[in-house]
Length: 165
Image (spheres, rainbow, N blue to C red):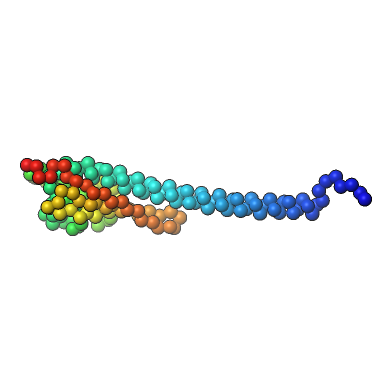
């Protein structure tokens, strides 16, 4: 018999086919993980945005004296808005505009100033005038490659100056 010193063409083709199939599987797993990673990155960006906005709201609310009824604010705002007084003449409201953007309104003795603080963020609150704290929920929506998602956070915020004259 003749001594074999290498691989036959059939053996090389089988090895090549197995290698290509393995690479295809590895590439598919890599692509799935890359998509999942980008999806999670978008989700974390949305949640981080909400927490930054929540921190801004907490900073203002903690300086408040008492929660107010949203119907008492000088402009028309949704009933689930967060309204509080900081002193005898200034009232601050956080509310969702009709464009689903979070806005802040400041009512002073002579004027009302309103401005947008977070586009695409909506607010809901359970504040009542007799309470010293309120649950505030923020929600935002985002889309990645046709996948629509909604993220929400919630926190209880207390008034530091509640009941103080």
